[in-house]
Length: 363
Ligand code: 5AD
Image 1 (cartoon, rainbow, N blue to C red):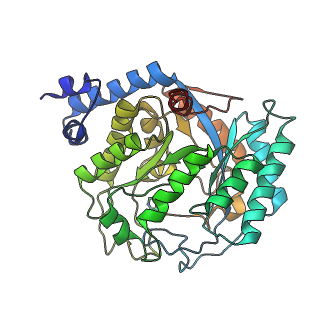
Image 2 (tube, rainbow, N blue to C red):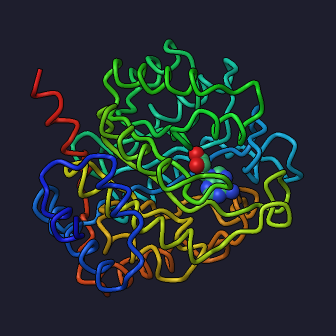
């Protein structure tokens, strides 16, 4: 079947998705991009929602084979002071970013869970007078936790959670993680988050060693079958201080970037009303690639809000951009970049994923 016919289908099966992800011809790629953009505008509008990203700690109990802040990586460890976290959130609010993402390495101890709950409550309380009646929306990205902990986070006021499945291929998941981490537990966590009522985000790395186009097609089906509300995916980028460094796994930048853009477009076409982030990892491969992510169907950007002093210690992969720019320059640059492709920043809006409401109204 030709690409135009596939793009015009209402429902896409695995073969359709594989065909779309296999596009290499420039004019077909433009057809894919244009279709994704059309569906984006129809289902979620043309605005770009903003989530100020606060990487508040890089301590981690895990040793993921790909990650630059894995337990055994040689980086300076930090946890921001509560006041620094609040200040970052207040800065986000002052810029009109409707929500903040609190992200860190994984810890499950009581002190950590308490600290996160307190940070959520503080941000809610302190941003109420600055933005929206309810204050900043809060998304958490602090990994696998018990159901009880997720419940505590929710009650403290976080309403969104990001937990990437990394790959829906269980063998590949096992290859890139130490044996202490299981696909089953990651999946259980996603299900707990959904049952508690979180707007739930997941995603994968694209271009992992050994990952096939069929695996990526299965990832898109995983998002659909599991009723995921938010997607954050990016190209795999080797990190020097890890077992999956570029010497062991030489990588093809251009391929990973182009596959990542196609994954965004195909996810938009298949999933329609979800939020999709154009991630920093795209920008790490090529300047302007984050804007390309928006052009290929993404509608969320997570601007860096981590204080400059610690940003260098939160490099999940090599070549992470925006390590030294001031928050002010980043904010101005972001607006210019987004407007340069004819899109607008959604200011003072939480920007909930419509899918969350659509899926809940079906029951
Ligand atoms: N390349 C690309 N993405 C990475 N992440 C971690 N390490 C890398 C890497 N080397 C992503 C993972 C994780 C998210 C926070 O960062 O998908 O879930």
